[in-house]
Length: 523
Image 1 (spheres, rainbow, N blue to C red):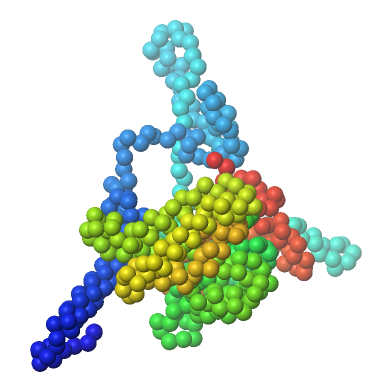
Image 2 (cartoon, helix red, strand yellow):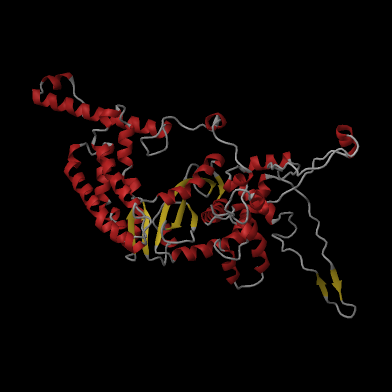
């Protein structure tokens, strides 16, 4: 902002002073809005829903915050999932529990006690009173000593060994179940390795975190990467891919301390497949060359935010069309409302009006989700296209009514700059309105990042990307992550001596060869 001396102000005309004051008021308002947005971003609720209750959940007092005496105790059927889903009817409790591992405990009175109570032969036994309770057994570890029978010919030097499980690595105590448990704790449940090591030690097992890190990196590089590549080949063939990226710090990547790396995420379109694929890829930078290399061979629609790398990718590859995210389009308007303390005044702002107009588009699009893609496209043309066109006409009408640097002004500019990409979803029923599915898929990584903060090496970052990919893809396909992580290093080593990789098809998350009890029952 331009500064003035007292003499300069004295020489200004009335109109010039008014202009200066108006400029100061505008800049003060922009500054106040910016401070309010930063404060809300730092300390406020991380949501774009403005009509929900105030306050934040606290992990510290989560028990107190979540406790509700009105919530009924769950039944055993509600708590434990069975391998075969049975629709419960009155009087069929035994059938519901048939798939559970059940231990029966008998509680009886001996004959002396019964005689003392009822007299000699003065009693008869009625049907038992039966109730079920759910027990929990903490992790159990056991050392398995393998004795492999060895046979030798009496006439030749031929020696044969009995069949035995394939080892992950020679002379290592690691087993698929142990490695899967460590991966599941770190990447599914977000526990740093030092906490996993401490928990194991409390159960009588001493494992250094360096050893566990070596196991995970070796498993990912040698075995799990084969499935990752198979899933990538599958993903590239899909008609719609959604992409996002987030930061990660890697301490030993050959660059100066504090350098920021990136974890890229790619997943299938939210509406285009019954076999979801979610893949992470680590890269040192946010350069366009990374998605360009990953998406080589892809022809279709890429759903993403307004980051310039994606638009450049589409310019260089005419086979890729960009669909921009409407959740990002409304974000600046949401920030403007969060920064407005007077809620009554907020309802009269352009930001509020913009959100109402975008909300109408969302509401109408939700009505099309049960339709087939072709029907959804027709519905969008008929019902939603007029709403979108009206929104952009309204934005052009009011874009000069607010400062360009304000949150509302930034929202207007974003929408107009991305107008053609924001309209892509209207012409393709497989394309979602926003990129929320990618943001949901990348969230487990960001949650884990808060716990372990950084990754030590590039090898660790690449391996983490592979493991996160398999866990999130397993979850998306209704698999139990631990079981799937155990299955892969159990089966893949059996085939490492050959060059035929067709066996990997049987290990894809949607393969009918995956055991039924590795899947969560449908609800």
